[in-house]
Amino acid sequence: MSASQPLRYLLSNCVLPANEARILLAHLLEKHYQLPRSALLSRDDMMLNIAAQEEWQSLVSRRVNGEPIAYILGKKGFHNIELQVGPGVLIPRPETELLVDIALAEIANLNKPTKVLDLGTGSGAIALSIASASPLAAVIATDQSAEALAIAKQNAQTLNLMSQVEFRQGNWYEAIDPENQFDVIISNPPYIANQDPHLIQGDLRFEPESALTDFSSGLTCLEAIISDADKFLKPGGLIAVEHGFDQSEAVVDLMKIAGLIDIQVHLDLAGQNRTASGRKPQVLIA
Ligand code: GLN
Image (cartoon, rainbow, N blue to C red):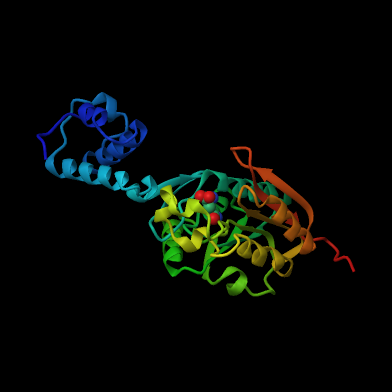
């Protein structure tokens, strides 16, 4: 390795896009020197010690190989919380904050203790953001992956939300007793179709396949979740799911077939239909 160089040299000579280089170097400064991000500017003449220099090379080459920034840092901000993430869980996406906002609006509206079910919780992003933002929420979060549940539980502990969120292992409703009915069900299931070229591009190559694709049309998990919602929702209860940009009509149809009413589609920040919500009727129509 070449002789030590000041931070400003490391940044200006890095092969990565400038914003990514700054994120990785700020992470390193915090880890090795407990310095804030502002040190990138205020200490730009600083030289890294050998250990930090070696780590800098390794972080840069991991990123050059395509590893997502969130896995390299081991964390990702989502809604109002920060989550520990690793290759066992999907990296929480900004568009999924929509589901959190829909659930929080419903809880605010009900204005009483609210039972929430998060299906396929992954890192716990949705369940924990809701619990963190509303003391009225009592959440059950499920995932079929033991590895994901371990990360989600760790996040709940770090965020001090264990008393509000219960984790259960199982596929969709498998771990839930139908006697147990919820005010709100939310899910960001795997909805990418098995032959979608995105699966072999960018960050997605590093994420768990089972969190991204249903290995089929993209709609099978959404269908399983929507078609059984009626059994697990209280009368008048709300279900909201995230889906692919081109799945809105199909998901709305699934909700109609399931007998849900008050069906609404919600746009993500890019202006795409990204979630659909519906309600179980108060009185079942004969
Ligand atoms: N929104 C993710 C993506 O397209 C997919 C997440 C999912 O399948 N639930 O990158």
